[in-house]
Image (spheres, rainbow, N blue to C red):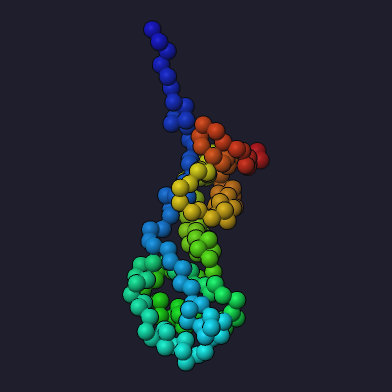
Amino acid sequence: MAEEIINRIANSKLVTVDLEDYYPKGKRVVLDIKDWLFHEIILKEKDFRAHLTNHDWQQYQDCYVALSCSSDAIIPSWAYLLITSNLVPFAKETVVGSLELLETVLFTDIINKLDTTDFILKPVIIKGCASKPIPPTAYIQLIQKIQLVAKTVMFGEACSTVPLYKAKK
């Protein structure tokens, strides 16, 4: 008679954290303001305000928005504040910078709110492969939080992990 195969991983106290499970749903948009500038380099307040008035802000409903200027212009802080004040009723989150910065801001908030109760004194695997754009900083923030409570922290998949941390006895 054949020996029964036992899945030791399924029966272990191992906890896997997959940041993709926390990935916020919603469209990501870059709003490049270079076309709102005179010769794509000079911000003229009157013209800039006219662009704000005539812009369709509803297109950002439930979006995550990264504000940027792809030209070499110097943009005063108040300009981004004016844009954001128009986005407030529509966008879920707005940052000045790249899409990667936007994702980092989103995951910083998610990880700060993460309940670590399930990780207390347990071996934890931070899942490594992701099909969504998880910023590298999110993994760093995650281990900083989990390491405070976990018995061990590993990276990868249950079948192939890289040990990262082991609590001292």
